[in-house]
Length: 478
Image 1 (cartoon, helix red, strand yellow):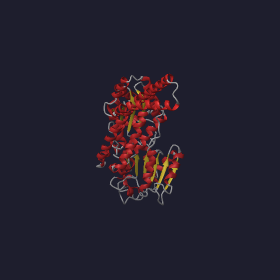
Image 2 (cartoon, helix red, strand yellow):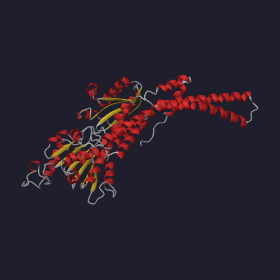
Image 3 (cartoon, one colour):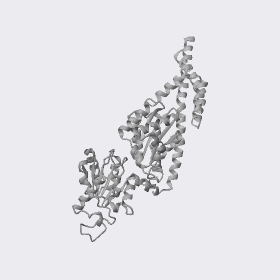
Image 4 (tube, rainbow, N blue to C red):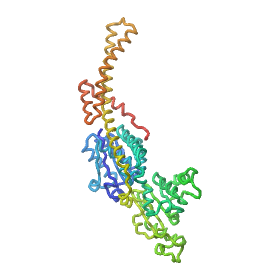
């Protein structure tokens, strides 16, 4: 195993760099194809989220692999290699496995213990399978990462160590008020209908908002999400809640009526500008729905009904990378914006559970088990080639015996054949079992080489077994 990961995340890079390095779906596919075309890599997949961009590959050479993967990331993100390099981290072999398992458990997330990363890992594996860039190593690795993440969430209280990014973002908007109290009766606008936006819409529905309007470039997806929200067994499951789907062209109108906006799209440019937010606030002031921000805290103001005590008329949560909402909205009176950068700063104070130590222990155990299994699997083609050679020797000797003793009847021939095979199996049993045990230990890869030398095995025969074993490694994600 020569697993290498090169990447950057919210822990290594500022949001401004992560934002520029974000990869669209077509760019991810091109990156993977180019990675396989590069000489050091034999398989690859990419884990790209709003908080990280990581390229995983099976490489022949460490230093050449690091140089090539770093160059490819720079080329496909559009961030110069000199600028990108200080923010890149590199993990190799067992450390790379440890990193992915930690990510899967939520230990490396902005909000410790969040579970959405499991879906993103599943998507990364599915992409590698769809493009046929993920071979046996990455299939095994990502499948096991999904199992480790699920184990961490089922066996520990890591979920209590932090909330999903959506919930955490809403808590930052609500500040010292419980989210359920803060959201009750509000009108929400969710822009986008992908996994993060769907989670946001469901979270808002459960929190008690009165209405969720879903806007999406493909309005049919928005309609499907709105229908799910209003199902009898849907996230809200209560009377008085409604949901609707709107065209992206109607966002400005919805913005002028919304109390809270959550945006997470794959757009490369801004979805909401600071000017659009100012116009929306002005529109509701003109309509008498709220007083402007200057008199929002003055109960005697005659320009309209009393506004929120904190002066915030429109709460905005931007979960996209690159950002959907203009950062200049931080300075718009009457608006409160929480974005990825705000969350990164706030997450340092997120609650930590004692279960984190237990999850770290699970990760360490699983890394050791995965490494042992991979090292043991490495010797399997050699053992198969050895047993195939032994079977050929037995077949040759039985054929020679048939020529020398043609008068043997079928029963005698079968008994002799079975006896010879039993002798060979017993002679090979102990050494092959033992060599598999030794191969699973650190440094055990050399035992496969020793076995090939001792029995003068044809390297091509071993390679043929390996090719047959990895011809169709793709499996459905767990």
